[in-house]
Image (cartoon, rainbow, N blue to C red; front, side, top):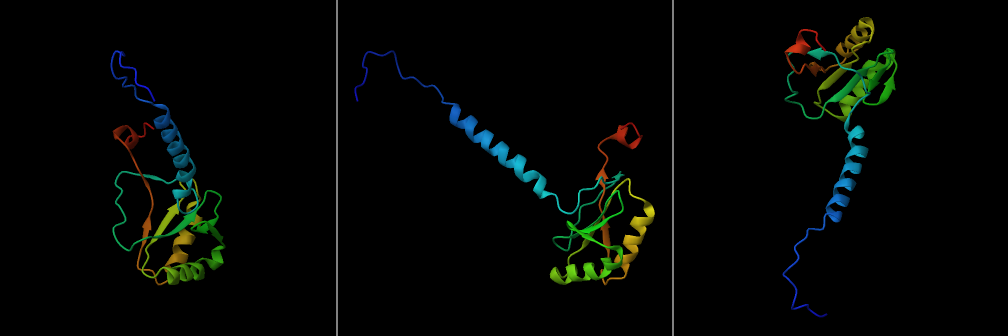
Length: 144
């Protein structure tokens, strides 16, 4: 280990390669994990002007109705006739958990209404309806 005494000074370059490596690894991790964060079946939610956050009850039980009329509790498909017993079983696993209803924007209203009527057969106190909040005034006026 010799030191060059006659050099012009200390070289203070930043080695960016490890930083880029770490950022790329984090990017890949987030790209893989992000789709897993969505709960319930993927649906296109209707737009709403005013959307409030779910404030109480903890982690909700997700009830989804897709465009093609299929009903899901979390990611498990449930027949319409079995919806009320399946919801009661889910509520026994998570006592006091609220129900979050996600209906696809393009689903037939009759199917959504039937699913909500099945929910009323259970002992749940209320159901929260999921919606996407409109971003600005052009969205409200139908510009988007």
